[in-house]
Length: 230
Image (cartoon, rainbow, N blue to C red; front, side, top):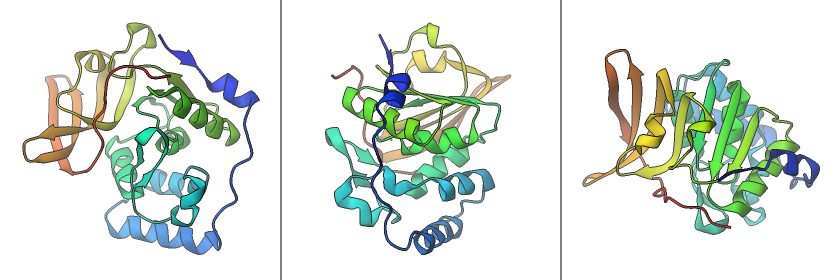
């Protein structure tokens, strides 16, 4: 069972923390570092430029908001480094008409990036407190095309519909059949696969001849766990 939290968050949106000092310079350096490491998609870079990342990090790490490092968040989870977020979104080949499913909302930063580009984003988070907080941030930013559900993203009902793009914010040993069945023809899934040689970022495309998988590169993402927590 899932719970739609967006309307709740819109009514209870709280003020966001103040941005770090000299945000213009920090943003410029941030974007340059992404470009230097190979991120070239203009829509992705624009979304990351205009999104206030400092509003998504814990207060105690506000000075690190524009650094390319992973940061701890609530519930023992981690906010991935910006380069990994950019690489995952860029690998989706995302268009403005796409419907996107995200498994693992976390603090909602990646959700917001996706919502700046896609037509609709449905993000599923197993931790209730994280889901509420993320929905509140998204509502505060006016991202009405992003919906946060509290539920098990690895065991979705058919009622959620089909998606053009799916992204997993965590690693799995194998893609669950329930997720594969939610991918539209011509769709793409970006996920991290656990293996004997480490964790690899993968791209799966649903082509006319079947599913085609390719490795993007190594990554570090926490394992995704099934189930729902209050």
